[in-house]
Image 1 (tube, helix red, strand yellow):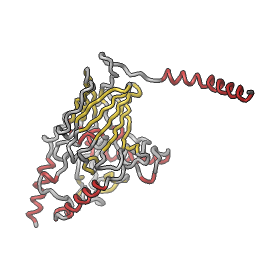
Image 2: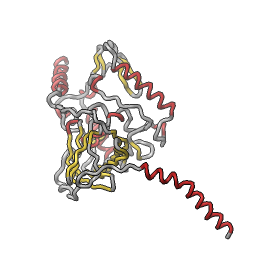
Image 3: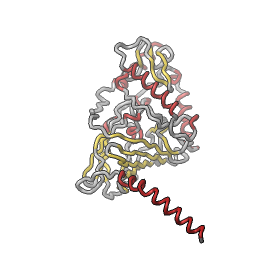
Length: 350
């Protein structure tokens, strides 16, 4: 009996000692504002530029460690500072350094991407560099931060595609094959980067904007000017026969979290370098954590492509200064005509 009383006294004492902390935690919890019709208000500009530079997949040497050590982070900061020096140089270098695989290589070291002092690709001022972060990868599930193994079906398709490429003579040339527009990616053709590619922070044009109205949320990506009008009023998905590059999105609120399910994708939309199937399903969660931070996660489910689902997660920061400009991809897409005409010119030499 005495032991039981001592136990009760210890529990009460522990509760009383933690009570102030519990009160503080409750007072610090943030309640987002509401729209006039009662939904959590998450409207605004939420660019993903801060996370540019955080890799999709984690370095295998880190295992299940999702965050960098202070020493590893310091190296990342030093890398970012060197990149800034390159980007802000008053005069261009005749042998420019380009970031490749976590280090800088010179034009002489990488002649296929930089030749005669000219970088082959977007100029430095196009790229958004992001801010150094301790988050080791965008993928947070599986725990190793790596893409799951491909299914046998997807592995066979991948092997068949690789064999078909190798069978073409142009595959052995530095520039690859440019026999027709069909050799170019959906992005190169200014069609789409797909839902996942449009929101993942990489390269440039990482702006995201959220606009709400009664029964709807609009999520707009700056990349290739994609915009999804997402019903949050219980409307069912479109019939499975109706398919688009960006899929069919439907949302609902779980407390302060907007949950969006997207289905009905066209097959073949690449995620990274892997074309997805018609079974692709994407679940997004938008959770405001303070006035200027939106927790974002995206879960990819495609049982025909990967052996299990995987999830990316990262914060989006509100910006009052970011401007979303017209992407104007087709109007400025000199790549398509240059790649195809350049390939024809090379053929005439042979």
